Length: 397
Length: 153
Image (cartoon, rainbow over all chains, first blue to last red):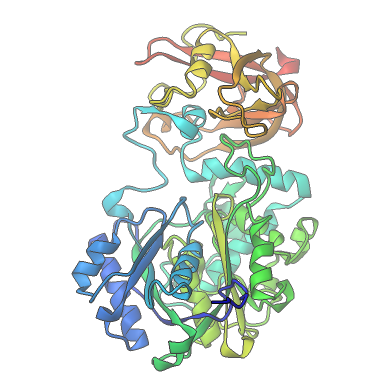
């Protein structure tokens, strides 16, 4: 049988039909175990869509989520399990890749309804910001930990320092990113930092974690879970909510980005040099088409690098572009992290950012951007693999 | 250059570096204990490679040669750490970590501490020279490679 050549793309082929999350807690404050948090978020996403949870057919996650697919399938009593994908790599680099993997499962006909989720209870399983109970270490960390380069802020500060040096980026640019996240969190009752505003003087007076990161340049550590449901575009309109379509996604990193320790050729980079062009190519869009961005803030410096690599400004223009006024909804040039993001809503490993992009396209954000037809998510700057995602309304198809 | 016995830049108690179970980096760590900096260099295409890997990333020859290089370079990146992320660092106060590029060894980079005043002004591009720091009392014993400004030696 002759085959018609068909463009290989996710563009418009799958839609988000439901989103859900638990309450978000400070680390260690969740009254629920981590697995129960995952179940609650998944059930909330099903309720949002108006779908029977037993009709879920697959699970996708990232960063070695402990809430394993087969246990979820048994706990929820789903009829059958048809896809179970785990994205390799740590940090938030997989928050969009998990959506891409789920979408690919659906487009390839492996599964019809896939839940993408992340669950995390740091109080129950240990924090990222403390390195304890390790006697000996080998591999990448052996070249870092004995020198006191232990936790994520210390692993990424030198890279940001190099970037600031190469492009003349000032501390005020990083500060603007933190202020925008906190500003948006004040309108978001889900946000852990709701009711705890931040201003420039409080930022400046905050302690250094590791130069060039003040306390407020670093993400929080939290407990909670978040989930979304994906189906094929053919079924997208059968559910309760306005569908939000995947316009494109991309995953990976450039040449030898994984050369340890700190030996990637393009060191002062968020690692989107190849991944950003892939995203725009699949979506058939460019930076000027994007109305609102959710960018993973492990550290503000990584956001500055990632936004530049997605073409919103040249690195040399970072100081002019990254101002508080430019980054806030509804009418800044590029409203950024409109739920409060990792800094001020919840560090749900970036998955709260994916949910917020869906809300923006639906028009239900607590800090709604004026241009909301096309929303971007950027996952995991400076790690490898990284990933990104563009979602849009039906009008963008 | 080797540090005087007993003086280490950071307190004892941080994770001790050891080679992987497959032994990939064992020559590197053994070299430091003998005041020698060893970096992989491909026997076939002569390219330098660090961190170590079993395969040359350029020509795909296996088992690169461990080659001694002079421990000197310049500061490529740096950070001053204030928040203690380990119980051993709680009383330490701020300290400096630097990323050093070695131009004479294919521009490979390595992380270490910058010895001296932790509050000193650090400038990218400044020349530094290596100092082997030995921890013979540790279990297992190990050595690190630290850095000092060249013009202060």
